[in-house]
Image (cartoon, rainbow, N blue to C red; front, side, top):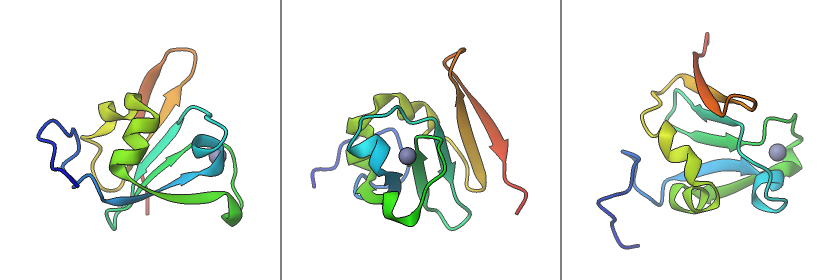
Length: 97
Ligand SMILES: [Zn+2]
């Protein structure tokens, strides 16, 4: 993979992250982004999910799906963000665990 200096995330573009079939296959907007304590990223549609709905992609791929998430490149480990649909604004929360 070609290293892109403009890549907004600190993680390398081929970092694996989780998304769901709704985002990847059904092109639902990403409404929930989590940067887990262990460094994993999750980009989900905001619905409840069964395990079969999970999909693994690279950061570069998910950024291609929804460029809007580049705004969350600075999300720290242990934080998650939800898109307030009516305001088109990301609200960042800290995880308790
Ligand atoms: Zn989903």
